[in-house]
Image (tube, rainbow, N blue to C red; front, top):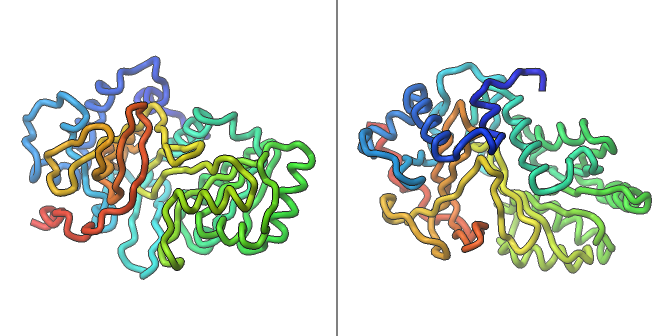
Length: 329
């Protein structure tokens, strides 16, 4: 991380130096003043003078605007991350002003839930991500592998080599993290057939679109647990439009790092916010998105549990008509 962090950037990752609501309000004001797309959305859909009393009062930008517009605060980016697309159209673009901010976010986020990332040998099974340009997940995995004390590597479809390398590392008592897109992990499970990887952290990152029958996360984890003799399959919840990730150590229950928060919105009424246990649209506050937009209404359905963890329940099936056409006015 060669680039020096500004005071507000450092504050994002230091709980002792800020109150979440105060910092969120500060970032909201900055983005309203400097992000034209976000300013248009706030002006068209909210009362600008309405006081912010709780997190649900912040205007959340539909995630589709990362496909339709350049969502940033007017600063030239160091890198542009892009999403995958099965059709080649509708690709999200995230203009990232400072890669050091993204690096800080994924390092501090991972380390908040696990041991220091550099203590793991990291194997990345991300075939479709490696075969295109602009993946934020590949950027993260590449950084972590390069800066791990034990190294690791990427694997396309060479399951035989992956299996050999993982088993060799486990035999040498090296802590192993196997990070994989969901469909590739399922393919690897079919290839490996009844291999004991219980001492390995297996982490799926999602990704089944266009890959045959859609399975629930519970079904996927049951298949992987049985194939690898593991008790829990870990999960990472992230996306092109975010610089932060939430993590689950099992059972599909995700926890956010301190600078990220989840709110649940009624998909049929954006002004109605749902209480814990009720399923609705996942809206995310990601303070690390300082120079793009920290307030995003996703196309994912989920619910928040009483312990503060959240669960992904599926996708909103009417995402193409979510009302963001207001920005075309």
